[in-house]
Length: 244
Image 1 (cartoon, rainbow, N blue to C red):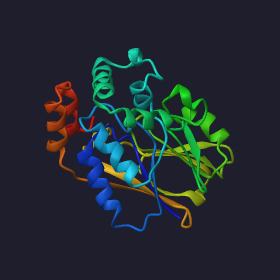
Image 2: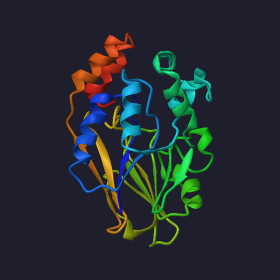
Image 3: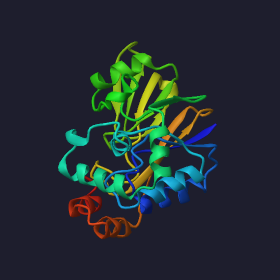
Image 4: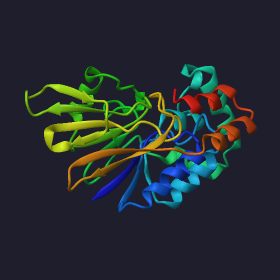
């Protein structure tokens, strides 16, 4: 089975449209989002509608939770808080209800999915290091799990040799047969932060036991204009060009 895994979309319709166009050229059986569908960008309802129309499997991110009052946005920086307040006010009730209904994690036939981590997913913890990854690796019941939240693509692997050791690969072109378990952060569709402005998505092939990331140019100016037109903080538009 072939899964298309999408990182944090953050209301970036231009990036999401480009990714879905590329996915449509592949033989993909299931579309999956690791959450943070909304926040930061200027097209929250349009992004929700696209995921729903593609029957995507979606988990709840911290920005999704904040927009429906399930997470106190006081912990967010002021740009994120402003975007949460704006998003909450512009989304229709049906979209807010959809965000509210999202699970914190899901277990699919060949993989697990959460936004931040598998352990205490409601805490939305960041996984940046092998030590951060260990609690989730211990809880994994599938050979591979997918997360987002940091906007930084990385694979964290529990190795076969030496047994029990954890290592990482910053490039997402992974042969899962080389590890006992692998926790993959798929980066971000709508707001990359690895100094690469391109959007991207991850293909997981359960039969080939492979994970591969594709990066794509997209119309950043269109996404930035939507942010500016919504009178959201200009910094949220400017950072898209830099990938930070």
